[in-house]
Image (cartoon, rainbow, N blue to C red; front, side, top):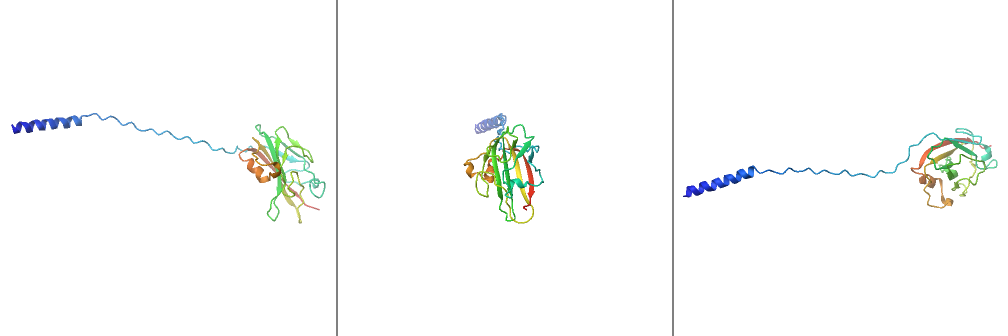
Length: 200
C-alpha cells in the first residue's frame, strides 16, 4: 500500500514538473524610448559679406576729410551703402576710435535707419535715431578731435539688420555697447571703413 502511495505521489510530482517545463512564456516587449526633441537655440544669421559702404570723399583705408573734424565745421559725414541682403529691415551705423589710453571714443551711434534709405547727406539729423556719443554724451554726431601727433584711426561700421534692435532704454541712454547688444543675432551683413586723420 505504501509503495502504491509513493508511486502515485511521484507520478503527480513528475507531471507537475513536466507541465511547468512546457509552459509558454510570454515574450517580453522591449520598451521603446521616445527621443527628446530639443528646441533649437536662436542663432545669428549667416553674414552675407556683400554690403558696400563709402563716405562723401573717403573710402576704406582712406583719409577722413577735415570737414567732419573739429578742425573744420565738424558736421556729420555723408554716407552711402548698397547691395544689402534682400531681407534687410533696417540699418545701423557706429563710429569710434581707440586712443593710446585704451578708452574707446564713440562719435556716432545711429540706428533704426529705414531699409528704404541707401544714403544720408552731410550734417544729417533727421534720418534714423541717434544714441549718445562718449565725448559730450549728446544724441548727435560729435567730430573727432584727437590729441597728440600723428595719424589717428577711426572705424565706421554699417550694419544691415533683419529686425529692429532690441532697445529697452530711451535713446538718450543708448551707447554703442547697448546698441551692439540689441543687434545680437539680427545682423545680416556689415561693412567696415577704417580711415585716418592727422590734425594740422
